[in-house]
Amino acid sequence: MATTNPLQFIQQVRAEAAKITWPTRREVMLTTIMVFIMAALTSAFFSIVDLIIRSGVTAVVGAG
Image (cartoon, rainbow, N blue to C red; front, top):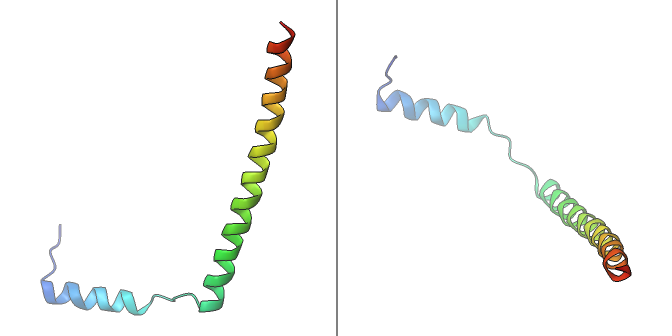
C-alpha cells in the first residue's frame, strides 16, 4: 500500500475540492420544493390507504 505524505495529501484534497460543482440557489430552491410536494403526496397516499384498510378491518370485525 503506497503512502502519501501529508503535503501531497492536502494538495490532492484541494485539487479534488476544486472539481466540485455546487448547485445554484435556484436549483436548491426547486429541489426543496419538489421534496415537500413529494412528501405531501406520499402522506396523502398513505392516509387514503390507511383509511381504506381501517374501513375494511372494521367491516370484517364489526360483522362478527
